[in-house]
Image (tube, rainbow, N blue to C red):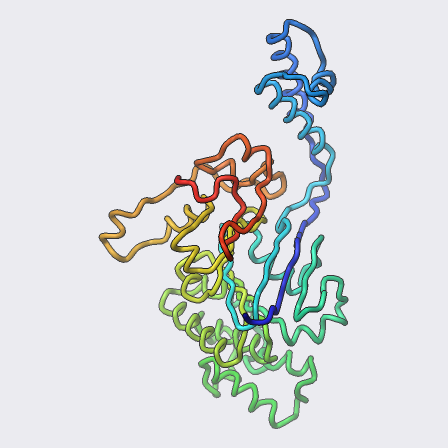
Length: 385
């Protein structure tokens, strides 16, 4: 097995909103419903605090009343908490040398935040990040400088990520000068920049052009060349092909594959497009509302998905085969993705899951290994939808 290049353990990224959670309305409503139900069931008076004490002492209050008391306790615990945007909520991830890990999920589920937190562009709220066996979680900006050569990123928008006032040669060479790999007047400097450009499919004469003079695909090649110039070991591809048309996407994907073989790179490839992820990835993780819900080898994921959300995503992939398209069952989800500030209790997917039960609302499913190398967080993993 290849050597572990990067690992995250319980990685959390919360962004404070400056507000506190207000559950007064829910507390009042739940308390009134519980009191009225107790009065109806037992023909007796009791306030909500007495009902909570009865539940804790083990008295049988019946399922409906017990649920209301539990809801009251949940709201009580949440009331007054400082509200945060929960971008990543305890992510465990391992990336080996020379492999590509794909990351898929809806917009706002925390994919890009995870990639940037791994690179220490955001300071993690909790958890640990290991790179080449070293814990870099609490590294300062100065300590991270040598690692910047080894860890790079390709951004989603190939135009906004490039400085419009700089030529392509200056954009690619800026980091080379910053890290002291070359001096500005070094004759080898321009030769090296052109070599990197050629590697990424850009002609020598383009070195003096500005970003606005390139097409979308060419700009993305510039972004790739900039990331590749420092000879990194790990690159985060943050939706690197989502802004490009299909024909250009295939060119960029093939380029990334060729570069990986030539330089033994490791990728974290973030995308919405499951067909693209399948083509480039070795293993794939599925994220939902800040959590990793399934993670396994790409062949296993597409052949035998276990999490309901993964099954829904796979059912949405368009088919080019007319026969398959006619027989393929499309699974539709109701509602929108919940807020990542006030997240649902228990399993975060239970508000949209077609097979959700009471336990899904109460208990957070553990992210565990159901099969060798196949991890999933679901109380009913593998169940038919």
